[in-house]
Length: 223
Image (tube, rainbow, N blue to C red; front, top):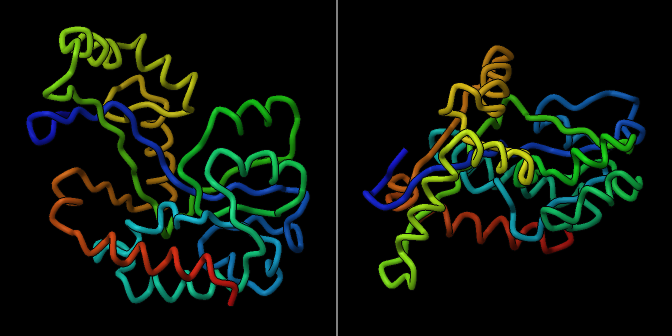
């Protein structure tokens, strides 16, 4: 779980798409990214202004830059709005948009809305399954490094992971009691082939940032 000798994985999320089951064209639940390019979805979709989660799709281990850029170009003609992760849930539940893709992973807000009966669900496209990690580390100039180490250690305990799940709807799949581990196992059985890049991969592939900038421009320019 330790990378580069200083970065500690403590959280993993799986990006996907949120949708309103009452707004589905023809009542058909989307299963893949390609489904959202159906003309029936036109002007009923939202994406993010920063191309969330499309960056890893452009990696050669997933779709590669050519296919991903072409997809985002086509998606840009389908969307009618841009919503940041964290503000899309209420817009989907209200019916303002039928779906939002891709998101930054599940959120406690969506879980709470669902528990209250709001029409909002999530799908993970089996053709674009990826794991996104978050890390903890102690800055070299930290004012209270020992307190930081204690907090970091706490987040790796069952209690810390439970707290992360309660506040972020995610935890680290490497723990046997992890909720995310169950999701990964279930999606793998459905045919998902997860791409899970770590810190070193991102450092070794600076071109992902350039490709993401291109996708951001596409999404922010009405086609």
